Image (cartoon, rainbow, N blue to C red; front, side, top):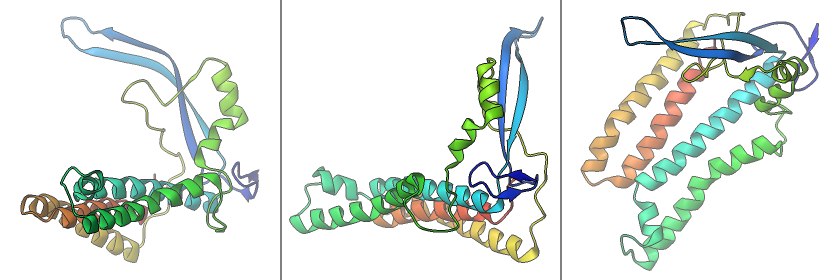
Length: 224
């Protein structure tokens, strides 16, 4: 039995492991007769032990990050930022309202920052953030040998898939995930309609709702 790298609890090999990719000896050449660039490289993977609890905690951290970004985009798109900065020449009351909405838009970012620092006393959060996987001895040793982070150069930056497949999602999870996807798509389609018809505030809310619904929908299906 292995120990989870993030909390120290015993955990077997499973799809909860965090897989890191490394590459080296990347070379780009041009194929004869046809102007096409061909890239070759060596790839190595490191499977960092991670338990189910830390996996859930890392997903919550990513959710908070997405929501914090969506909240800021929604705040700017709603026109409240222009009122706060005085671009639209608002009245004193409108500027106060814009300042209040600015504080609300910053709340998800503060939650994300608190999660990164480990300041929230919630048992479902991981004791160490996902980036701590780069301190794993096997990963550090490969980096010392000249391996570069990432499964490959340029557009091959994503981590390689986990060799352990997640369990299939049951019917209720699929239905809930599909419902969130449909709601997110509907909100996304309504954004330009609301914006160009003069409802900037509603468009900002719909942007945040679209990002949040689609991201939550993706979490109802186990990650590969």
